[in-house]
Each structure stands twice: as C-alpha cells, then as structure tokens.
Image 1: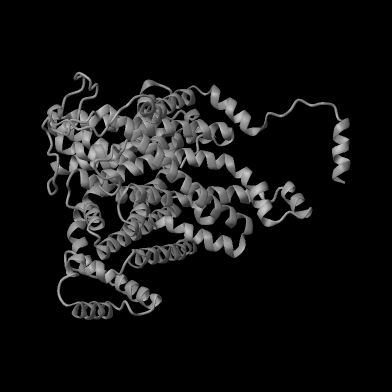
Image 2 (image 1 turned 120 degrees about the horizontal axis):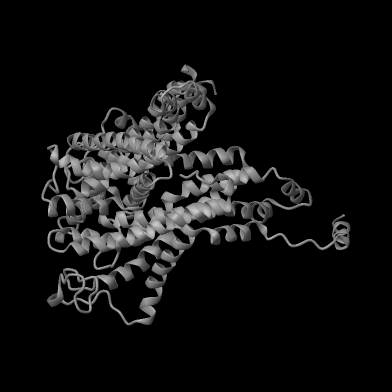
Length: 314
Length: 301
C-alpha cells in the first residue's frame, strides 16, 4: 500500500511542475513587455521619455525580469510554494491575500454542490437501476442527459427565472447567506448529479448480475439487504473515482456559476482578472485551481486503493 | 513474389466484395432510430443556419428601437425582439452559423494537432512518446475550460481567440486516442510487411497507421463538437468570446440577463437552441461510437 501511495505521489509531481511552468510562461508569452502592461498604456505618452525609460528599467530590475528564464521560473516557483504569488497589477495587493478573501465563498459553493451531486446522484442511480426499464428509469436518464447538454449558465438563468422572478422564493444574486447558496449549488451540482446517477446505475446493474448476489438472494435474504449490504459496496467503487473528476468540474464550473449569480468568489475574480489583464492574479488563481485539482485526484486515487484491494496488489 | 500472389488471385472464385468496416458502420447508423432523429435535428439546424441567409434577404443586426422588447408572437417577429428591436429568430439563425462554424474549426484544430502528436508518439515510441505524452499530461491539471482560459489570457479576448483556445483545450484527448489506436495497430503483420518492402516512416504513419485511427477519431470529433459549442457559448457568455453586436448564442444570453424580469423570451430561446444543437450532436456521438465499434458500446468519456 505504501508503495502504491508513493508511486501516485511521484507521478503527480511532473504534472504539477509542468502545469506551473505553463502558468509561469503566461507572462512571457503575452505580446509586448510585461512592464508596459503593468504600468498601463496611460502612463506613456506623458512626461519625460527619458525618465519613463529609466522607470521601466528600474521596475524590470526590481522584478528580476533581466535574469534568465530558468532563474525567474525557479524564483517564482519558490515563491509560490511559500504562497507568495506576487502582487496584483491592478489591485496593488498581494495575490495570495486577494484569493484568500474570495476562497471561502467558492469552497462553500463547491462543497455544497459536491454534497448535492453525490447524495442525489447516487440515490437517483440506485432508484433507476432497481426500477430498470420503467418510466422512472427513463426519467432519471433524461435528467442526467440534460445535465450534460444544458449549458450551466442557461440552467442558472432558468432557475433564476423560476425561483426568483416568477415564484419570488429565493434571491437571484449575491453571496453570504444560506438562501443565496441554494440556487448556485443546485446549478453547479447538476451536471455531476447526472453523471453520478448514470454511473451508479450502470455499476449497480453490473454488480446485481453477479453470482454472489444470486447466492445471497437464494439464501433467503431480503432484496433490500442484498442491495444495501452486498451490491452497493462494490457498485460504489467506480463512483469514488468520478468524485475526483467532479472536483475539477466544480472548480471550472464555479467560474461560470459565480458570474451568473454575482457571487464574490475566486471564479468571478478570475474572469475580472483576465478582462483587466491582471496577469499575476490570473496566474495565481489558475495555479491554485490546477494544484487543488491534482491534489484532489491524488487523494481520491489513494482512497481508491484503500477501498479496492485489487488496486493495491496491482 | 507480389506478382505471383496477384496472378493467383485471378484464378480464385469471385467472392462477394466485403462492404468494409465504414460501410457497415454506416448501415448500423442508419438503422439506429435515435441517430436518425438527432441527425435530422442537427441537419435541420445547420440548414437553417447556412441556407436561410442565402435564400432570404435578412439582417439580424437591423435595429428598430420603436419595436424593442416585443413578446413572441408579435407581427413579423415570431420569437419577439430584443432591447434594440432586433428580431430574435433572425439572430438565432445567425448565431447558429457562428456556433457551428467556430465549433467545427475548433474541432479541426484539435483533431489535426492532437492527431499528429498521437501519431508521432505512438509510431516512434521511446523518448518521443515520453516527451509528447508528458506534455499532454498537463491537461491532467487543467479541468474543463481552464486550459482554454490560459490560452485566452495569453491571446486576449475575441471570438477567433476563443476558437483557438477551445481547439487547444481539445488537443490532449485526440492525442491520447490516436496514440492508443496507433499502438494497437503498429504490431500488425501488414505494417511489418510494409516496412519489409522498404516503406519509410512517413509512408507507414500516414498510409498504413493513420487510416486505422479514423474510427476512434470520428467518435471523439463528434463529442468534441458538442463540447466545443458549449465551451464557446460559455466563454462568450463570460464576455471573453464574441463581442456585441455579434449574434452569438452565449452572448445573447449574457445580454438577456439585464431583461430577465421583463423579457423572459430573450433568456429562453438562445438556451433552447444551444441545448438542441448540443444534445443532437451528443446523441449522434453515442450512435457513431456504437456503430463504429459495437463491442465498446456504453463506454464514454
């Protein structure tokens, strides 16, 4: 087991390094000089050109932009490890601080959505599998197909139209209270709910066809006991992996959901930063998202090893 | 040796020509009811998007402030008008052209680049494979549209940039699938035979290995089109893609947010259009996958 965990840990290091290299390269791939971008076009064309050139040279030196690329990358990475992600061009505050302010709102949203999609998805999947080829099954499958094909921002608008505009039950925008969390979490969790429902259904049907289930039933155990005690344990193993993938969907999806519901989260901050060309902030958010995605998948893989002894042996 | 085989063949009794795997897949596809229905929806929307502007003289940008925010069913505006008095139906038709064209080009970018990477990695193996696949692994750290956001950060905003960004986001999946299919094929005897009569790397890769990757690649491309259309609409909705006054579905929905309380139709119809198009392409993808390889029916993502 220790070997399996160590193997997975070692595998994720190059992925993280490469991701960080890509994120770092953003500043060097953008057309034009980063210092010009930082100072803004407004600073040019006025004042003494010689003084300006001096200022630019001074800033370049301060930021270490004159050093070779690998040195710059190493310095940036060492900073990132210590949560020093530089300073925002626009907001003139440390990037880590700006993200930390917005993070609780996004984490709250993502965890609620994850909880919803796992509980609702697994329940719907079980119901669909047990009522196979009935209208209930068809309904669940249709619901899950909608989750894949409906754009989340449109589903969000429809929910606002129904619950805020027509029924006047829930607030349409903002963050900070429980009633403002319901709609965004529902929208963010919808796609995952459908996927988990489909997977649970398929996996449970597969397990229910195995011989040990027939044996358990033949022993005279109630169907309910066989399903909950015998079948579900094995059927839910693949579902655990999907939860890891869900973390990624949730992080990317929160960008859209936070924009529609005007929630002050990290996702909304990312879009603002991209539109304002606030590169250090964009870099910080993308690095954080990528890292948490890799770590989430790593944790799921490791827990998978605990749940499924076959993986450990392999 | 080759001549002897050909000479022998002439003396064999005439066998009925094998229909070949693609023709058989086509038959299976045509027999599939869901595939027929979704193809009908898809082709109908594509025909409306590309043919209607040719036949009728329409202008989705025609403003008429006196006719602004007319509800659906108003005279001359079956789906109503927006805040500038522009006809919603005409804008939907124009938006379909934008979504389909941009989506198809994005998929083409992903297919060609990803396909070449997969072909090289699979064929050469060794360090070429390791290096290329490590680069592709970066995708493991960038879920959903995050990789596209990185590209947009570098390139800037706009519809063409979003097209490239979504295309780049699709590269890893094509590379993986094509590589896997090349690895399966390159041990086949006919590849060895081609090599033994002196075929070079280029010839083996493009004439002998590439055709075998076509089946899986078509499946990925179909699903990829659905994903691309959704991503492009999402990014335009966020203000990173199409800019006003372009009639793009995601952008139309973003603009509709301001009129949610007064004009529900602006928020409903573009979404229905996106969903119909994406759903039909997704169902078509399911059917294409099952038709091309009936053995793996049911495995997705």
